[in-house]
Length: 315
Image (cartoon, rainbow, N blue to C red; front, side):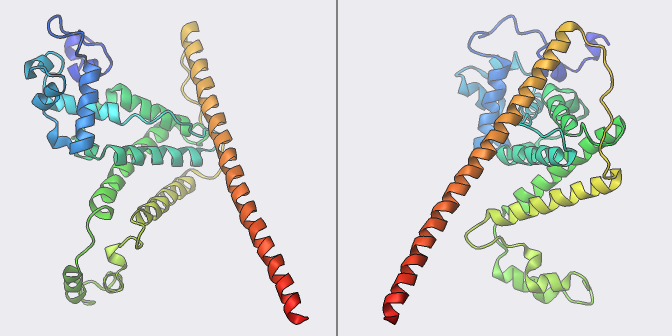
């Protein structure tokens, strides 16, 4: 493939595009530009991200940015690739069900932290960028024990990615939206007749259709919906692929000595993260146990005091 066939945006994302020879190179870089743009989008939304606004962050002219990023759309794609990368957390690889559950939650959390990503148009070249490849790598790690061929695992990645984007849209637009006004609710109850909506009318009249969160706990409906959706999706995958473990090993690639060392280093890092996560779960369990013991001891003291009081009262 010649340089003319390589997408400029993909080359920028991988750090392979030539840096500008002129301009404020010391103060400005592609990484800092993308980081500033993401910060603006997180705080004010994607519409607030313009080339002029990002340039103002560094007190440079808009033309200074154009030496690094050709268009606003290119900046959007670079922002999406940077923001989708998950935090440095452990993913279970021994059980593909738990691994994929953690992977799916990572994707959903990324959309909650950066909701503007839902407004960023997707394009074929997005999937060729390093952040997206890192997400794919984590998903494939989670599926190491999934008994499926490589093509099916890639299909599962696409399924989970599409599911996460759609589910995040529902969380943002519906579950996080304003409650349905009583007037609108009354209108639907009256207009939704059994003749026209025979299966939905009961849900409308009972109020279930409007999906109101629990009073005082607006996150309860989101958490419940997310857990149900993830559980149903994973149960479907398990039924589709069967319950047997063993999995299909990743394609064999001949590695150089340096590459083998890098792979071993990555495996050690992943194992270390899993160990730290396990230790944190133990600490959390110990704290919960200690708290429960204190409650039990207090209840025991009260029970003894009550028994003594009853004994004195009977004398």
